[in-house]
Image (cartoon, rainbow, N blue to C red; front, side, top):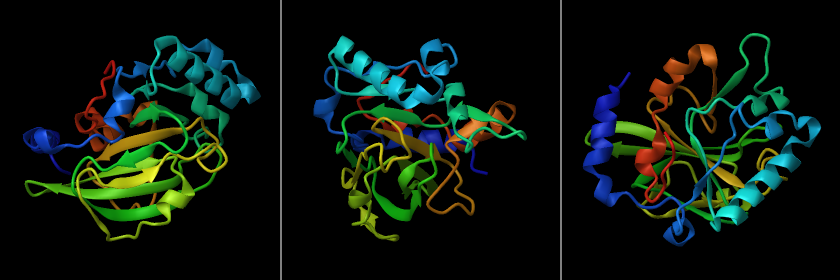
Length: 233
């Protein structure tokens, strides 16, 4: 496995060339940070109304803070995932978020932060899953790593081809709506992946608490690639 420091050092060395993943205009004023953790009891107790309550919470926070983007945090313990059989299993329920979410309007354009090659494309249509998904491959200073973009619009993904080269700042896709993005409020799940293994068009975005350290090492905090975005860490 690649050393964490080597990857983070390579990204830092090329920080001047990192392009925003969403339009800079959407990031001014700065996005607000959401609480999607177990401490947000309104979400945890929503039951079958979870998606509706989540919509209300996101919209309220955007309006309250006068911003157009809201941040869902990395390494956050989200028991709300257990509304879906995809994450709630007897073996190991998964609730640790491995990426950063950018909640914004359906159709928001998504860009590549660095030069890339389209590694794979997937349509993960289970309830609670990514929906249309794109994984990009990047190479910096001899280090290969990957970024994942989930909850996209099908029409925007269909124009991509595996192996296609993208420049830094090139459009990857747009945010999808609830009917196609796994059932979620419109947002981008953005994840940094150290080693893709045999995964193709998909990769775990949520880990179990018992394997938290393993998955956080495989998927470092992607904030280093999100220009103009800050979170609580």
